[in-house]
Image 1 (cartoon, rainbow, N blue to C red):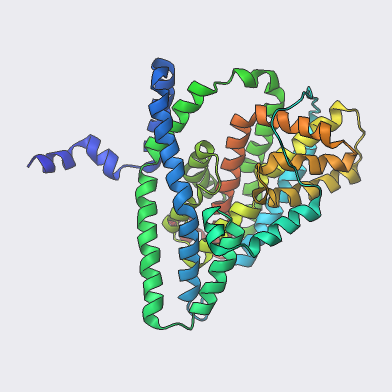
Image 2 (spheres, one colour):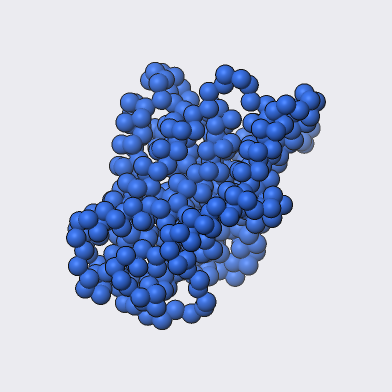
Length: 415
């Protein structure tokens, strides 16, 4: 009897069956309140956040490997998989973000105070090194790839194994399907715990870091965030509209709300892969498509990283008084897009690829590393916004590639 009453209680109904987005917003507000009212609780809150992010990071590589292998092994002949258009959208979106950052930097030129940085950094020496690193990731040991969350290697092994298992006995392919369903069930449980994780992440971030250190770099941060918001709300919707020929904003806002919010606080594209896959499933997308496109997008769809690399590089250029002409700006956009696609293959992410872009203007590595240091100072919000843009766009472009050709009613019915 008491169990029935508990299940019927409005609060329990909200916890068990309520909107996950609304629950996450409640967790966000609760985290802010805890940080302001009882900062001593930061340690316990931080543990919740660490457990949530750790759970996502631990399950994501296994999920990708099992899901991709099972999808390819059980692929039905004649079934259409629209990876080509999605890949084009990824590359166009990343390049367009770099162009936006260049134009914004020309309209609002900024300078930065270059100071020495602490810690050893090891940026790549050139584009060839970045591409070589990506190619070496393809031939990584499969166990090592899963342990180190090397998604290029995971995809390569999963695709190869899936193709090989297409000719396996039916019982073997059924085992893969059951294993995929089991891992997906675990992911579903972890995602339902997202409100607690967001609560811990928000509270611990505010308590430990605050925003005082960001005030001195407010204009630079505003330019970075402004570019990312413009890409999210203007450029990406335009790209999607040209693809699907429908009003893109319902889909854009769905992706930002259900993927971007979680990515903003986890600050990890890899950790957000299970969230994105769950959203793709809710949108009714083809599992054979999104099981490959989402982890691939977490590797090469890097509009936010492209913005970061371009804005910080041009800020350094302005500080040093180096003139920039239009051809050089176009070249910077191309280099920034290539660097952004390789960001996940380099320890330190997009910031450590800034010296590569700075080398276009003859800026020494010592000065470029100081620019990286400035990036780390504003990294609390910069990295969060960058990840939110990158990760939400993975779902957006996957959906756009899948929705193309549908009528308006079928399109809106899925949102």
